[in-house]
Image (tube, rainbow, N blue to C red):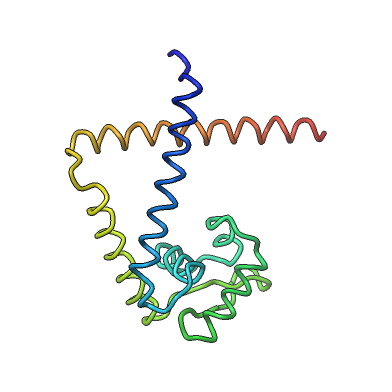
Length: 159
């Protein structure tokens, strides 16, 4: 398949970046009434998807430093949003669980996110949405492949 022209590739990158920024900005405004910072609602959102994760797993998923997740977990636990329980398999680790209160907020976050997606996809026919989804999935797969190839190449050069 022919390579994409550099100008078009640059435009795609800028559009993806701008769309991401715009979505975050609108979403932040829509959830402001919940009284949570972006870091807090993202923490709860990710934890709501996989309750019982370790702090290390959550840090990796959120692409954050473990110490930052640990500090955020302490604050959220103190505020009654999460519970930290000892990991039975590893005495040094904690498993994180959302409280019932957090579960209600995560449900609100999901509803607001669904509403936002419907709003920003308005006017796009279902066929175009399916094609866009497929194309973006291909871009992500290419990046995952490149990340893996570069990771193994960088790891090999350290030996």
